[in-house]
Length: 179
Ligand code: IMP
Ligand code: MG
Image (cartoon, rainbow, N blue to C red):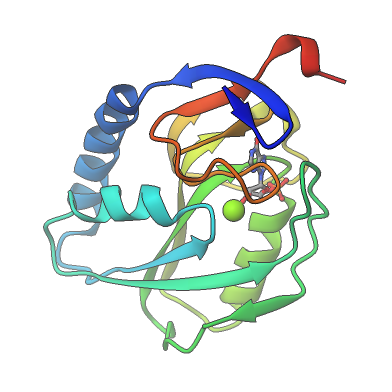
C-alpha cells in the first residue's frame, strides 16, 4: 500500500478496531453513566475513531471537536500553539479527550495542562493507539485501544503528511523504509 511516497503494510484490521471500540465504549458507559460527560475530540486524526466510539456510548453525553495546531509530518514537535474551536464551558464538567494516538505524550500533556486551567470535575483520555516506548511525559491514559510499537502508522483517521486518513484499516510503515 503506497501512501504519498512511502510503503505501508496492514497492521490492525477494521474488525480488530471495532472489537476494541466495543470494549472501550462499554467501560466508558459504566464509568460515566449519570455524569453527563463532555467528549472532546482532538482533530484531525481522531475524527473517525470518535465517530465510531461515540455511537456505542448510549448514555447522556455531549461531543465537541477542537483542533490544536502543532504536528508536522512524521515528527512530533509537542508544542501546542493554538486551540481552534474551543468555546464549550468545561468548568465542573467530566471531560473525556478523544485522541487517535499518544506518541511522545507531549501534545496530550500540553492539552491537558491547558484544559485543567478551566477546572473540569475530571479529565481523562481515551486514545485508540499508544506507543508506550515513545512516551516522554508522565501522563495517565485511562482508556487505550492498542499499545503499539514505536513505528509510524496511518489509516483510520491517522495521516502521513495529510494522506491516508481515509483508509479503513491501520497500516504500518514497511520495514525497508525505516530510518
Ligand atoms: P505526541 O505529542 O508525540 O504524543 O504526538 C501526538 C500526535 O502526533 C498525534 O495526535 C498524531 O496526530 C501524531 N502522531 C504520532 N504518531 C503518529 C503516527 O504513527 N502516525 C500518524 N500520526 C502520528
Ligand atoms: Mg492527533
